[in-house]
Length: 419
Image (cartoon, rainbow, N blue to C red; front, top):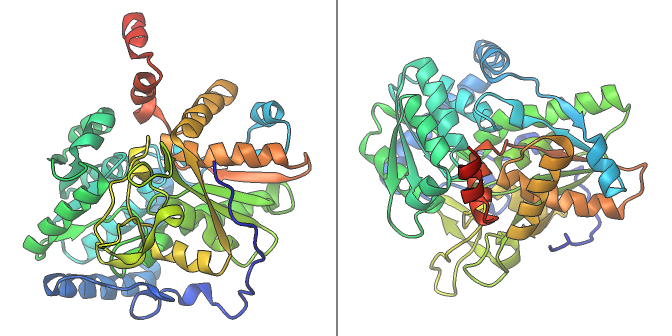
């Protein structure tokens, strides 16, 4: 497990977080829109539609209503008392995004983009998914609105997340397996983008994370800002103060940037994102972009990417399908440069251990993605005094991962016999 770099935060007073991204979709040197000409028009159309919706009180009112009645917001801020006593250091709070409908934070963005697609007159939705949580969120909102729905998913991820594949299909979605490359998230995004190019007139692509071409990184962040907004209000109501540290797992980075955004100007709150350390930090064995990556362009966006000297994308690995991606969202790269958000990584075994510890001490099964953030938070808590407070974004629940964890722990046959 790697520690984040110890650094003093650069003065952020001259940075208006609400002005990012700029009109070109850039967060400093990151972001932008590196796409073929065939996608320029639908992205421009989407950007204009989102800007208009963002400023429309009727859109915001309808979204708030759906987040409350369909998704289940607000989510609870939970003090993990037994876990805190077990670790013996800082108090550990969990922001319970796992309690949302479909089991993860992904429903926030899926609802926002589905409402936007409805305003734009689209009738068909496509999406990519890795862990399946974005896929099931998209399938659910499509069932709610009556959209036809196609979900692209790597064949390896379909194996790891068979339950979510079934749930998507139950919700009426067509799930298309992708057999190329590593058969994971990167290839699923490629196929979804190919579909969009072919069907731009009636189709909207609900991209699931805060990455890709403009306007997706800023738009997805905005739809997830409610996580941090609620967390801040809840801490002030419960504790009368803000947490000392906030920790979240980072794949593309949607749950983390939504969790962190309203705390960026709170200089006394340390923000830490945790990437997937995989089996090791050797090339092809992890998905820690800031540990082994280089600046480059992938799937429409300039950011930190795991690639070789020739610019070819490296294979990635993580025990969690949702973190198994070669690039990180551009806003994360921007705030890392300014020492405002720090980044660490946790390996596969760390995540499996954290999965079991939270489950046994609190009766809460975390997603394997979330377990990476938990693993690092447990380490930090053990190093801190009991008057300190850590808040972890519990971005998703682990029902989807239970049988994969059983397989990895060599207990799947035992469970089958018991059932």
